[in-house]
Length: 470
Length: 162
Image (cartoon, rainbow over all chains, first blue to last red; front, side, top):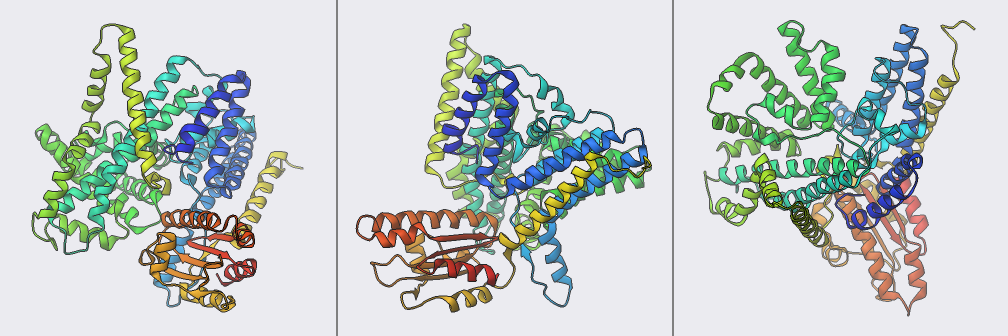
């Protein structure tokens, strides 16, 4: 089920909220779990069994590691078993097709193989399960004794499909006790509505600009058009993914849970290092905690540090998808981060702030080309057009037409992707002296935002979140 | 037993879960997986099984008219439909280029069935029953629909030919 669907907004969510707030506190986790399973089963009636099996396996693996804690060798064996099983499951469902395709490309004979569709959210819930397993091994958390509470941690519907990836350590206490209040609920609802508007009004609309450009035949695209298309995609993926994250954080808060922020205005970054502190924070944190630091992080020789960075970023790229362009995308960022650390990072810091912003944004745009391209060949062709190779001139009427017909949307996107947009919204709602007026204006603004989003939803076709495919 | 080698109850449950996962994966592969076989090969076997007395091959314009889909958008399309307006018989098989298209085609198939039910409702109950018993299968990037007295048989041939 999509957050941005009429069924979710007008049936599933109101019913879940109603039942959740009617039952006594000790029942709330069970209501939340039941709602989460229904939510997942709605779109994945077959793969819900896979998720439940993954929950069961990780529950027993956690217990097994805990029971062997006084014997470090056996505890390590249990940890390795759990990690391998999780990676095998993820690998089979996500990377099996890629592996066979690669094999077929190098072998002289074509091996036919069967393919399964990708279970939605598997990358996210497997990483959550791994964080739990490793944290139990490190004795950072006690294993969860109640399998239903553990199931809730893995399957909680606000963040099940596309994150943020919640670490068990961050939510352990909240599973037992959390604060519910009308203020928190209202605050969560506002967060949710902002996320919905980002997705439905901005991401989907600016996404159609990118679709127009990507549907154009090669040789008919000017440099200007290619850059407009790439900028449109950059806004689409940001509002799509951060919109989902905002909805997840907002929904969590409505039910008394507090998730960490997943985005912090990444397009105002002054460097690539800065960008990755602001984009998909929960994934970067996961890789830092469970891959980068165990590999030795930066407390080692420069060569080893460079190798660590390359490993982490190739894995980050591969996590996004079983395609060479994602691996290249990860490698691209790994190399840029190494260059910033060892070659030009200090020089970039000396540049005027505006130039630093442009430097980071242009490099991020180049990165998105690898991300949106179906294959590496397309990516290099598109990049070529952006820099004049194979382009239909520098500017053309199509490029101007795209800008003239979408300038307001692009300005809105630019505003909303910086803190200035949020400050502007707050200026409208908080400029009133009386608290009652402030509340009334806030309500009107957010209800209006909600209604406009719903009107967009009613008229548009199926438009899932881009990060569902990961 | 020595502590170093003993299996606890938790370990037994853990390994049992792994066994259940293996069984589940085997079942998934057998009953829900798609195939990388060329579309032509699959279509050939399905076509050979069709009772063509009441079914005629349709072109891309018919696919657009009845389903709102462009055949050029997909890897392969096989579309048979009855030439008689009083019959609801239809067999459609599409291989999409990606997973996103699967949902799009699935939605179009559901919409088509509902629309046909409305067409026949009230005057051709046996055709409505055929539509009620329509066989719809999604296997990987393949979507298969059969509305016919032999729909189950066609569906079985489709599954076997993958």
